[in-house]
Length: 188
Image 1 (tube, rainbow, N blue to C red):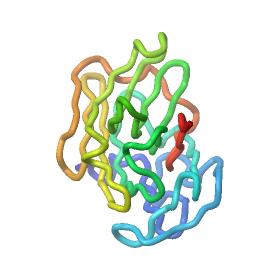
Image 2 (cartoon, rainbow, N blue to C red):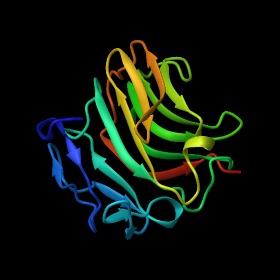
Image 3 (tube, one colour):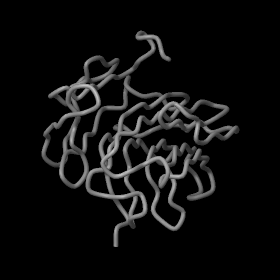
């Protein structure tokens, strides 16, 4: 577990999209969709995706390219892991690198933590994967943690390591913002 002083941004979504603590900006730079909250694991939860909000926070001070950890609770409400399309829960990207935590679309369905340096599409990236059909279940909460640094990328679900990869995985740079929510793409 990270020490409180190591946390760059903590957004609890307890009735607000403003972060509880942040080394950068507390509030999102932009919001797509309608912001509303429902009961979560502990207190309130942000409703995201087609039925809710997609938040774009400033990356400066709040996320680092060379190392980081993204931790969140996710509950598929209006989709299943086997459906066509992907669901991105966290993403920051630029031409020089990216970090993503998402559910990939079939036939290669999987829960992925992806980090890359940019450059050649589909060549300069690394990922840790877990089988989304056994991890994500419609209507059930799952605790996800994805972590990366210069030597590895690791994905955890409900406290169990579900994927890991050793290698030079840290992005050279990330985007000006990072997205939190459920940004679905690739649906027929």
